[in-house]
Length: 157
Image (cartoon, rainbow, N blue to C red; front, top):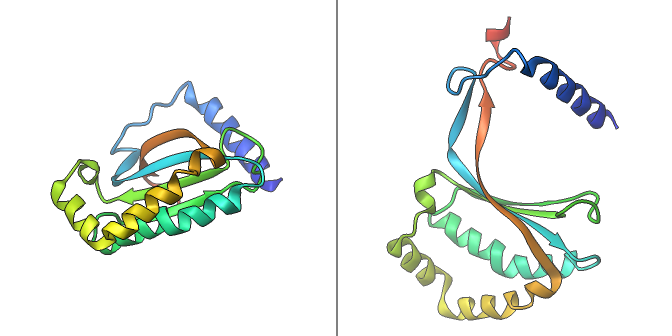
């Protein structure tokens, strides 16, 4: 409840100030070089644990290999506290150090397949063929983290 009150106050302040203010990139805020590839997923009711079980042996393990090879910086799974509301109830996010890391690379692909292994690739294909019965991908995004300049720093004093 407190979070909603704070969010509503922040939204009101934003709307009140937006008519006279125009923020400038690199002056008022910056964008990270790193990018997050985010997928929003609507998992069917009572199927989240089944889907997560599959992800653990496929998506999570593959991201661990990619991370160990330096292909990605990090990855995360976010689950909604209210799973039956909204357009999605799960987010899968992978952090890359830059937009260039999203480009196709035969060298990275070959390195990953060698580390992952052909048998694990076959196992992943078998597990993931059931995913459409458990969930719907509702969106896919590539996002930069935005940092406001001067917020919460000594510059405000």
